Amino acid sequence: MQRRVRQEFPAYFALADPAEAQILDAAYVGAHAYRQAVNTPRPGPYDPMRHPLEIVTNNAEQLLMFVRESLVHTLAFLRLPAEEQARMRARLFE
Image 1 (cartoon, one colour):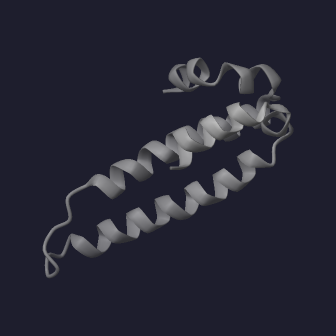
Image 2 (cartoon, rainbow, N blue to C red):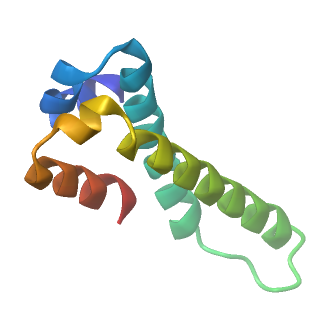
């Protein structure tokens, strides 16, 4: 997955220091995990697995929001052209 994110957002990685690169790696993995959690079929309302699945989904969403806020405040992200920033937001967070 790390190779894929670096191929998809080379402009960001060209500007990023190692800590900023890790933030985008985390955002990419977090976005994938959140989409998986959201798209997992939900069991019936009385199924014992429903509550743990909802907890996992909520936690994935909270972590993704935290990483998103970290990412959009990195110097590497702020130095990108507005079009690239919008593309990254759309790909990762929408």
